[in-house]
Length: 279
Image 1 (cartoon, one colour):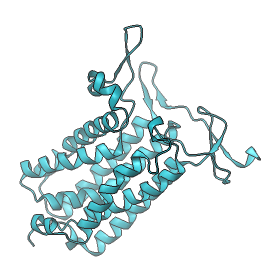
Image 2 (tube, one colour):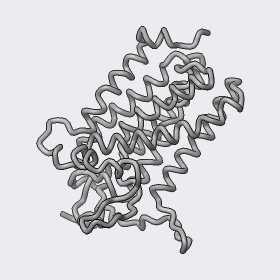
Image 3 (cartoon, helix red, strand yellow):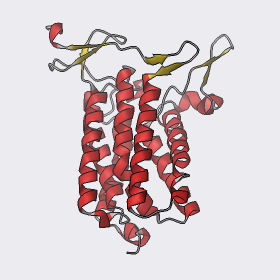
Image 4 (cartoon, one colour):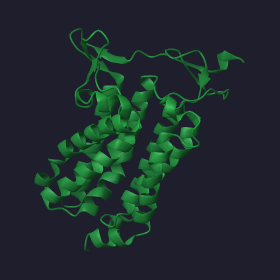
């Protein structure tokens, strides 16, 4: 095998070191993604004549919903045995070491499926409190969400985490911090898909803005993101040992309900019509 064909990947996880404070690439990508969504949502709200007072609280609802949902999702979906016996570590970014001491670790483990559930719950609370139609809010968020998903996966790439399976394709990455085996850059596959999904959704929105409030864009976003996730999972290593030997890993199993919900909303299911904005 000619390793010269492959991409050696070993970037510093720190994007900017100020001496007293270091900014990691993963955190930076999260912030860029959230700011991108914030700016685009602000633009959508202006175009649709929704007041600034109703827009401003959204960022905090979304940030907390995604963070709490993603953290709880990782703990309960992937490591329930450990975290249910160490519940404080589900909430605080610390780890209890064997010698009895505590170590600050940051939130090591965030699950996108949990983040999606958390975001949907947060948006329901936001829409109720702001007296906005829930399907209108969900559609708007769905149009711009792929940008944030793309940024997060690029953060995973910079961290050399969620690595792919061994392969000999010429664009394989050698994640030097993990091993010297050429692997699929699954994080990059997802990031590129999500970037494409954003442009697809934005083009459809510009052509059919009247579909906002029907649930169509919400369904389209769920269907595209989680269908791609099911297929891309075949190029990735399992995240936890219990997934070895499973026909479908945890990421794929958790994606199926979102794919079905996406199809339901795109096809204008009964509940979507009931909750849809009255034009």
